[in-house]
Image (cartoon, rainbow, N blue to C red; front, side):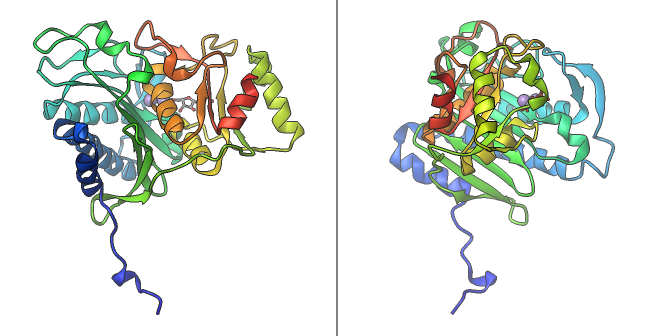
Length: 327
Ligand code: AHG
Ligand code: MN
Ligand code: MN
């Protein structure tokens, strides 16, 4: 007999999942688990604000510009405040860098973790009710406890991340993350206020036929390999899909197979996407899912940043597609 909805089990909540991992990986205990819970809590709050964004006056521009020169939306600022507040409270995190802040924040506590965050990704899409996201990376602090943090704590290679992931605020909201043992996705169940495991051990197909690029930039692409690959996609009638929210474009390609390209262009000769706030986190996720992320010359995770708002070209997605582009 087919089960009615009422009989169906709820599944594994994020909390239970984290607990079960503490048994499997003793290094994941305590403070680190709490940090993941703090991120999930901030995500729920931001999700709530986004859901009512059309009803109250929190859409639109705030009239300020961030370090990258992007005009800040009111929700950029709101999401930034929510995440920084949630991360500051618990004492697990000692330092934060955010796309929306010029310099690093030293919380002056004895926490062990550094967080890098793009609080609201794809924010130019907010006013038109299109999916947006949050991207985060977690590192261990370098400077000994009780000493002020320095640039070295923040300018770490992506390879040193101990966890990373993103929240996609879409038709359903999802939290997808890795702690270096595969990738798992949780879907938010608003009536329960819980993230529930919906996509366990996500694997990205080795091949795909979807490509994602802002094609309006075609004539100003500086990397001949990207130009060539774009032509290859067209010659083979691949499907073009580009939302303009990196999290949403990445998530689709992760689940369906595909490649996302943001090459260096005349406008952004060093690439547009930020290494510390966007590329590293997604590169860790894609590698853990069997895919690949490169700037065209080296793996994203091996790039040494020289400042926190460092940008990079990004080619990320199905392994064989990314390899074809660079070879
Ligand atoms: P953010 O909203 O955090 O500034 O990020 C915007 C990024 C990314 O989400 C997206 O893929 C890309 O910018 C889109 O750039 P174009 O508008 O140049 O295509
Ligand atoms: Mn972004
Ligand atoms: Mn952003």
